[in-house]
Amino acid sequence: MPPTPKPIIRRKYDAAFRTEALRLAGESRSTQAAARALNINPKLLYKWQKEAQTPVAAALGAGLDPATAAELRQLRALSRRQAQELEILKKAIAIFSQTPDQ
Image (cartoon, rainbow, N blue to C red; front, side, top):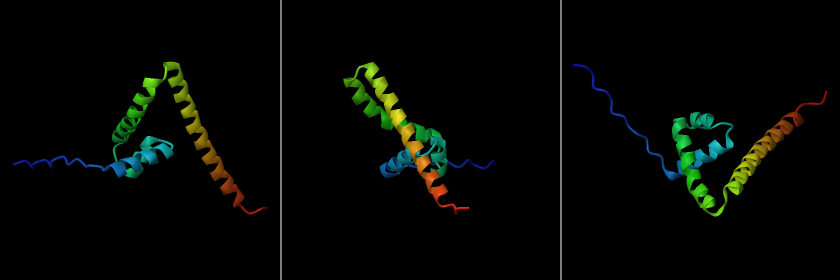
């Protein structure tokens, strides 16, 4: 008689874990890296990101024309990128300021 396969057990994540995962994914350089760090499927994290953006986008999209909404998305993306670049520069300054003078 062949061995019976184990039933698939789905893990359930509470709202606090999801919030922390989304925060980590936002601060991380990639969503996949954040998913690996949390030991969850990257597709699940992408799904949570999409769900988190949907209500906000729907609320904002109702009051904005398409051109303004597109510009807002571009400005937010630029802001995120500049914040990441600033963090990288801060870390570089911290590293180089610790080296002994020669």
